[in-house]
Image (cartoon, rainbow, N blue to C red; front, side, top):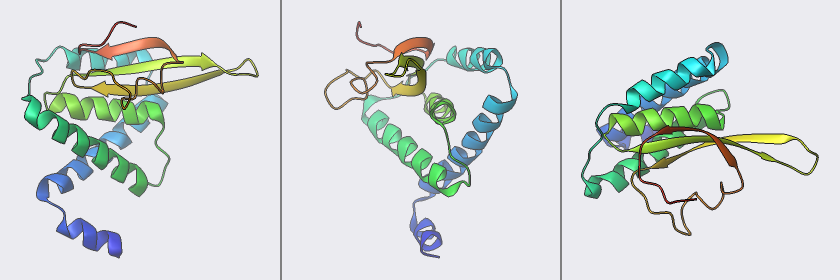
Length: 154
């Protein structure tokens, strides 16, 4: 009941973002399970051809709200959202707001000679620094890159 009361007092934009995040997490979860990745990839690349432009003063706030709504939606939904489904939903939500974003999918090998896969999104024209997610994903070898944005040389 407490969650419902908190939801009631949220701003309208946060409520709409939560609904959008739930729908996109559901759609991306179903598409990852039922559709070949080459089709998902081509759809996301077609989406990327749209022009993306938003003023930088609103960009950080929008990125924060998208992250918050995806976290809230993942906690509300009865299934576990994997990194690929969350990354697809985040990429779409950011692109809908005109924020340039890049989705990465990569692998790394672990001690027992197996591979671990991971997907993540770098939003905006961010400069990679110590607080950015680039350091924790540096050990992954990037296999797929979808999107546009200025990224540092690696």
